[in-house]
Figure 1: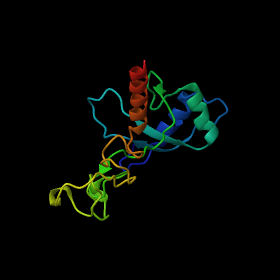
Figure 2 (figure 1 turned 60 degrees about the vertical axis):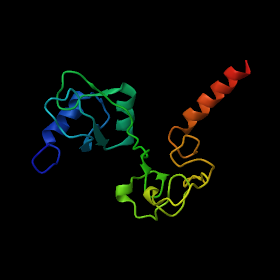
Figure 3 (figure 1 turned 135 degrees about the horizontal axis):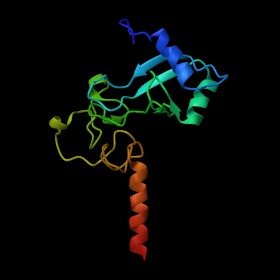
Figure 4 (figure 1 turned 180 degrees about the vertical axis):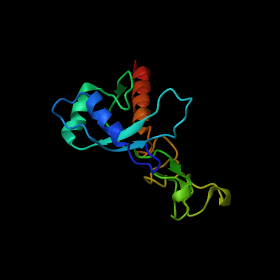
Amino acid sequence: MEGDGSLRRDLCAEFVADSQGGSIDLMAMKVSWLSSTDLWKQTESHIVWLKTKLAAEHLLNTGQAVFGGGAYGKFCSRYEPGKTYELCFTVSAYGHMQGWCKGVSRYGKCSGAHQTWNRQKQEALKCASCAGQHRSSGWHCIHHPYHKKYLAVQKKTTAANAT
């Protein structure tokens, strides 16, 4: 990287030569590091945007890429930005965090329009995400990131109890 944050042209040329694309144009158009650089880290993850889909498929098929003249190829895989699995404690829903939320407050146990600390009485359970009879943070909720694991455990438990 140069001082202005752009890729060094010689580094891009090395990447093309070292990654052995043959007749495939492996020109890197953009690189973004997923974590801060640290001299003590063994590895660092970064995303490389290539010029063509054919180039990306080539690197995925070979399973490695050499970036920056390293002695060993780096493992490469398709980058798929994930949906955040954090529960927003403002609206009691998944997909974002309360620091960015401008929604109306909803309590995670009854989905009432109030925060946890302002609870008036013991309300019946009602999920703010799916309106089910459970709390928003429970694995019962179909929007919970571990809901499928919950179902698998329930299935195993039911099968074990049946025998």
